[in-house]
Image 1 (cartoon, one colour):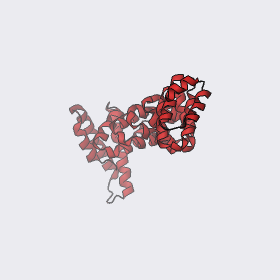
Image 2 (image 1 turned 120 degrees about the vertical axis):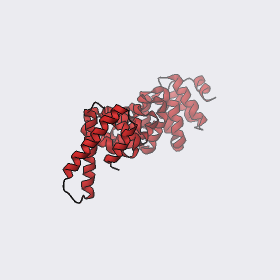
Image 3 (image 1 turned 90 degrees about the vertical axis):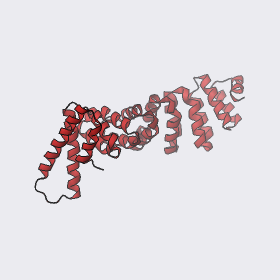
Image 4 (image 1 turned 45 degrees about the vertical axis):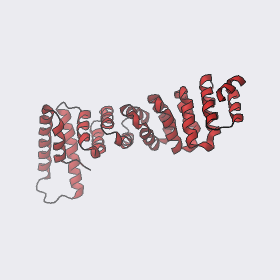
Length: 275
């Protein structure tokens, strides 16, 4: 939905007196300019009406920034009242102020987390920055929507999957298991690559990653555990916890012992891990 002058005017009521006065003047001025531009037209076709509304949005944002109201603050104000319009506002803001993409993305996602996936897709499509940078920014803005961020990023740039995993896990290590699970379900043929990227970035999450993957890929248990043990082989305690998790999930002890010994664990270490 495109914001109208009346909707934007209404949204300004929540601002403080100084901001409301400045922004209201902007609304009235921009509305007047666009109405004058429309001139003597008796009929306005839908396409022209949409174009007029888009010009209004752009002019409205520019006037608020010109009056020392930051673009991020403007976006938060509008989206808090009309969440359904946040993506269209971000679209215009990124075109108008591409150098302020960090402020725009952060403000929009913080104000309307439910639009995170669409905002990330839009930012990647517009190439305002690299995909990994956008992923990091979006997760920082709203960590609880990390799955939506990595999904959107991986769909937009599948060739950067490894880097997306690495950046996402480093930015939000507490969600490493969810990140790996989400991306592995979408790219089941790249489980090994996804796990490897995650464990190389944050080694201590091995047991959680294994637990998450075994829950959705029980038929790939051996590949999952073997990869996790191999990538964690330099950390004895990590390997033992992975083996314990796999054992509790019903993976064959014969296979687990094979992985344990290949990772350099002793017989006693293995016995302790799977007891």
